[in-house]
Length: 596
Picture 1 (spheres, rainbow, N blue to C red):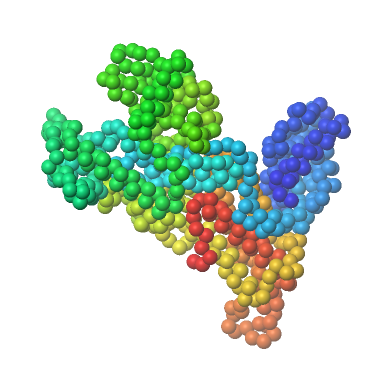
Picture 2 (picture 1 turned 45 degrees about the horizontal axis):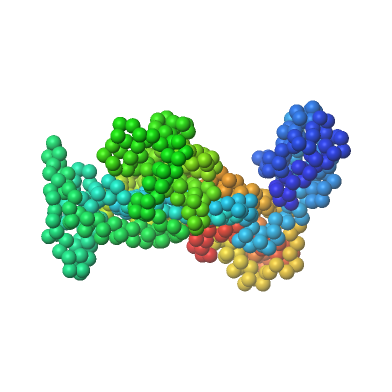
């Protein structure tokens, strides 16, 4: 019997007690939804397999003492199929012990459902637009964007496992000043000049500049001979780069697609596949920025002041109004944000019921204006628009921070990380920590084959379960004659309970937008499985004492060999663990090796 089944049973008992007039002043309308009746694993296993605080939740509404109300629940639960015993403890906890067959039923449930075990459709009917990474196309993906790639794709997989339709989206900032600075930097590099003060540095700038020149030459264009206007220098003598020119535009139009291609390649190699690659520039070229402003103007949220056009965001909770068209006639960056949200909500293909933005720590100040804009369009902040803010990543090696990249200067890129520890360890280590918290990536630890390395620890549990299968096949052990009720040892019970908790954990990870909970669950399951493996046998152990001979050796073999029905049951339990670990790793975009 699963925790969900027990929760449903307790919910039904509460309604029965009301209908039979045994629940004091409690009425049916005061009983919370089933999901509110939490069934927990007691820390002290002497208290049973599962515990509920339902009586304490409802006692005040019933006008009864919690322990007295708990006794009513206990009497009903004791008569339910699959429950061995019920005990009321402390202020009114209901402790439940299942019979072995009921507890072990989860094994057959897992094996029957396979990789679909725990998946549900409670988020079905919703289209969630999940935008993540969205790094500027002015350089390689840095470590912050790499974290969002791991977290975002894992989150998308978890949401899909809960029935949601997820649109993975990458927003290319290919319009505005950052692209101008990128082009200036390339022109300076092409001429062997110092990087402009506001430009981009790194060996990749020299690489891209050379590629632009080679591509242009192949097309019969001598890009370096095109007109160029020197931008001069600032008051300290730092070069500012050239002004508007044909040369800069030629570098821009050729280099930006090159960076697009590189970003797309990096994402694919990181096992992240986007459904939509959206270009900011299209919002301007298609007139969507002007249309979005017109819509807000019609709603009474736009006004003119000091020669500029303003969004009256304070009407919707922001701390100040926002300029969207500057007095010089140029659009402020926020104008594109307004148009982009409107596009997500009203596009012809897969319009978003919920637009989830995954932004870096430096974007915390954007939340107020974004939520104000959401409300101005008639939507509900926190529902139709959800903003997740990620924290910083520190990469460590030998106890010291790693900062330098051979290609990108004073940053660590996605390729640097995967070259050092591989895609599996990179994705797992970045997704296993709550994005609300900073994370330290220890390159020495994550490249080691030790139990302290969390990704190795989980993957090794899967590989070990596969090895059990191979040994069982060699010994002729199959599921035939399996009796799961024989899974009645303490170690068996711990593994069974861990498996039973997966469906609720998966649902919670989706509702809370918390894929890191999947990683924590996998580590707990792996720990429980490794302990089980060391004390319970599917296949008899080989004789390890070379001095043991004759009857002594046979006694050791007999002691280590479970009876066939128990061995078959343990094989099924082993395979259930293997199934859930593989499913959980897949949700994190990590492989489940069969050998290590």
